Image (cartoon, rainbow, N blue to C red; front, top):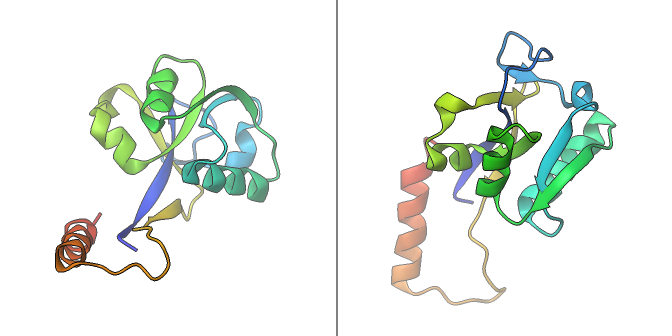
Length: 139
């Protein structure tokens, strides 16, 4: 594992369902259309789990292969997106988006290094993993 990252709901406008303006219970978002990353992506698997736990089936307006595209579509007002924190940070568009934690306790996912079972790591590869862990440990 490299680090644990928070997952946000992003919107082009403030959502009345936000508790204290900071977090949202997903069960209250059933009426909204969503822009989601396509099935088969790790973030979609995590998103599906969040919807299942909330007991809702979302209206999916659009599916994409990119978290960045999902945020840009949400930014244009086409629906809500659920994306990792770094996606919003990379786009540097936090000022033009409303971002909400999912639930009072926040939803997260693990960012991991994935490799084939039995893979031999060179010293360079091991060093790169350590650098990433050190860089992101306070993420």
